[in-house]
Image 1 (cartoon, one colour):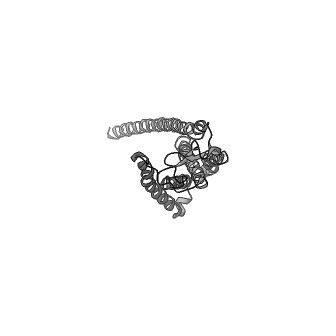
Image 2 (cartoon, one colour):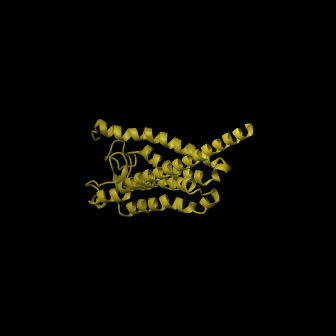
Image 3 (cartoon, rainbow, N blue to C red):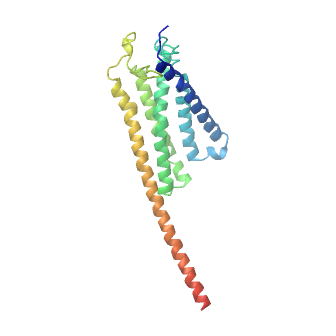
Length: 231
């Protein structure tokens, strides 16, 4: 049996704990939305449902952590090349979909708060808000599967260099795929959300100023009318 360092053991066990918490939380949100016809009928809750389903699978992959990795390649590893590829697919797809759903939610907030769209109008573009994270997520997940990019990446199966005993699964350009399939997207999501929240903040601030101006004018008008009545 291989001798694994404390760090390698911790990397295999810790995700199971945090992943289980996330798994339970995602399951609760899915159940919370599905049990209520009223919540199921709202675009916002359906977007939240989509994000939670994605996170459900991502959290499950974290709970599995090193188990699907081929036996002997990581602490607690008990899988095969096939199980590792399967985990890599679900991990990549969920890791792409879950944060990208935040863009869909941000667009929803922009349409409602900034543009003043109503529920019926938003429902007409809802399919695009779901397609935005799901289609690229499945696309990158399947691409990694067909390109044989998924290998043991320390604590989980993801895009990683193959070990010498699996030369057919080694791609020296795995770093480029990581950048294209995840890191670049993550930074794009962060920047988009920052800009979206800034736009919403400015919009709400302008609305508050208009409301304050209206209330101030209304109070002055009431005072003027009150003085006239007294006189």
